[in-house]
Amino acid sequence: MSVTEMFSYIQGFLSADQDIREDIRKVVQVLEQTTREILTVLQSVHQPTGFKEIPSKCLKARELFCTVRTYTGELKTKFPVEQYYRYHEHWRFVLQRLAFLAAFVVYLESESLVTREEVANILAIEVDREKGFHLDVEDYLAGVLLMASELGFQRYGRYSTSYGSPCPPTSPRHAPNPPWSLAD
Picture (cartoon, one colour):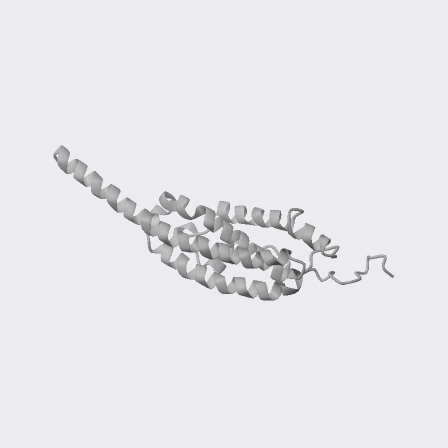
């Protein structure tokens, strides 16, 4: 093989790789936009009237997750399955944010911690690495940690207390005069 042929081969390989990366970027941009929309919907629970609207906000978020499912399905087709980690950096952050949003919706609906399998199901991706496009343990855990931050004193806990609730507003204990209060 001549030097010219060798450089032509390398140039072809690099061009093909760049095309794959561009296709991935386009899909990830749509996922990022949808993620921002879901976040905007869910941030309203921090408003004074937001606690009353939790069911409708969760329903709207679930509807937007249908769009996410469509684009994760499209993303799966943009690269060879065995090269998942080669391109992982393109969608890692958005997948972590989506894991957080899925965890937050599940918590708001049921006050339970979402499992990795539930998040993968919500996003229409796999848990098992061998099955293709999947949710890494690290991405799932990063999402759960973001949710913990959201539920902690930073936001949700502070606002629920500020707006007159001694406990999270979705708690069964959430009542105008909970049994442990001194308002008798």
